Every structure is written in C-alpha cells, then in structure tokens.
Amino acid sequence: MSDVKTLLLVEDSPQDEMLTLRALKKANISNRIDVVRDGQQTLDYLFRQGEFADRDGPDLPTVLLLDINLPRLSGLEVLARLRADPRTRLLPVVILTSSDEERDRLLSYANGANSFVRKPVNFSEFAAVVARLGVYWLATNEAPR
Image 1 (spheres, one colour):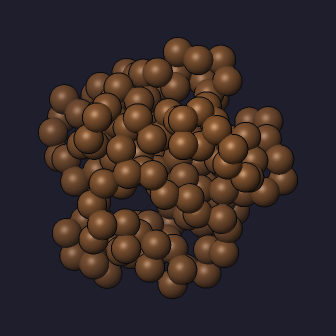
Image 2: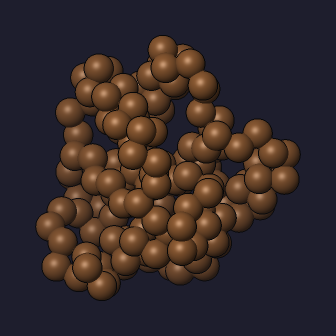
C-alpha cells in the first residue's frame, strides 16, 4: 500500500452516496474518496481491470465501505471474492448497509468482513456513524501493508 490513504465507497443509491460524502466532508475527512456503484465495478476497480485498467491512485484503498444490496454482484459476493484472492485478502472491508437481517450480518462476518454497520435512517445519526468510520479507518487504524 502507498502512503495515500484512500477510501473506496461502494454505493448504488445516489442519495446514500451524497449523504456519505457530505458526512465525511463535515467530519473534515480530506482523504481521497473514490466511488463505484455496483459489485462488478468494485472488482474492476480493485483489480485494475475493465474501465479501471488505467486508474490513478494506490493499488488498493485503505478501507472499503461496501453496501450489501448492489446491482450485478452483491456485496457478499464481492466480499467472498476479495477474501479468496491473496491481493485483497487483508483489505479492510466495512459492510455499510441498511439491512438489519441477522443472516446478512452473519454472512458478512463469515465471509471476512472487518465490521458490519447498519445505516441509521436519521441523517444526523448517519453522519455521526460515517464520521466515526472515516476517522477510525483512515486516521486511527493501522492497515496491513
């Protein structure tokens, strides 16, 4: 990993994307934040293939905020593929989802998620959760190299 700390947000909802980016900005998170909108784009971004074959930036983000309910490939399918590949096995992955299903939580951890966070419905609570995630994963946590 390079010294550039990047957050990759995987979110198919334009409204949730906007709220997440706004919450990170409000928390003074000035790191690079890249956004992809479906499971296949996530894999293409991380493995520098398809439309992301020539992307700039570090090989891997510092942390991945991954929604579960995504088009093309679900977040759980993405997570399973990441953990199966030695290049991404240790990448910190936070499941950030509106799902409150116990099955989703258990499958997330069984597939190697580092954290499971349910998106609060209230914006101020949502902003606080996202801010804490950003500070922890980008400023406090020491990621694998």
